[in-house]
Image 1 (cartoon, helix red, strand yellow):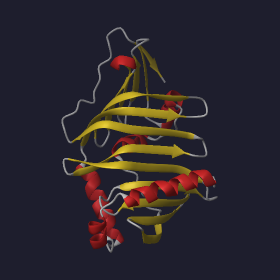
Image 2 (cartoon, rainbow, N blue to C red):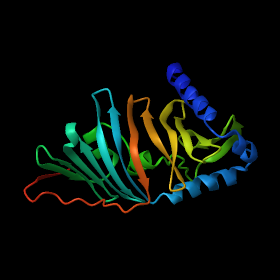
Image 3 (tube, rainbow, N blue to C red):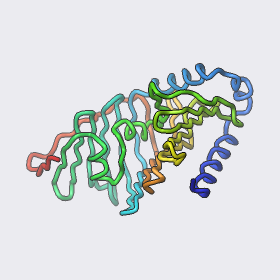
Image 4 (tube, rainbow, N blue to C red):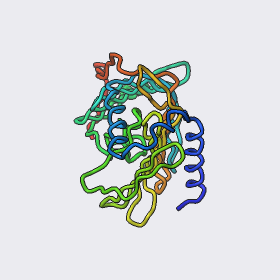
Length: 255
């Protein structure tokens, strides 16, 4: 395991632990695993739509890009992402549903349309992310489990809960903020013990009685790829428009 990356991971959680409310943690840090997971699920289900703007950064061995975005998300399966350049000029529009991936380049008047699978994300953005991983990157929902997962450890570490699972592909670790019941850290391991996915949520903010992280980062360490989402403004459960109509003369490329 990369020692430097692990050190950074630990420091992030140490920092998060120091920012939580001691009084509430003292009262609630004896909760059962079922109750903790119930509260995480309750928080997640409160989020139905997201409208926000900020900065998105994509890093890979091939290239690194950063720019402004506006996001319109409606759970469980609709997203529109507007990419903006200098002076707020719109340069790209991405719409996602479970059936379709559409990216429109405003400069070239060209749209790429295909299935919303990992191949399209890898081709367009150099990120091998599944559909749900993209949605979760904007909502901060990282604690997915499968039928084959089994709990091997449940403990209280400082001001957060730690849950470890054994999975058919290796293992998972979930770090849950003991005050807000938001997953602030999530890691997946393969059967060789290598970290294949790391997700971190920070700068927790309360919007309409729902806690939302303003800084989210998803890292694929073995591939040296990552995406970072930093919200400047974010609104929860407001009306959003996720659909997008292509200009009449746009060139459409199907993949």
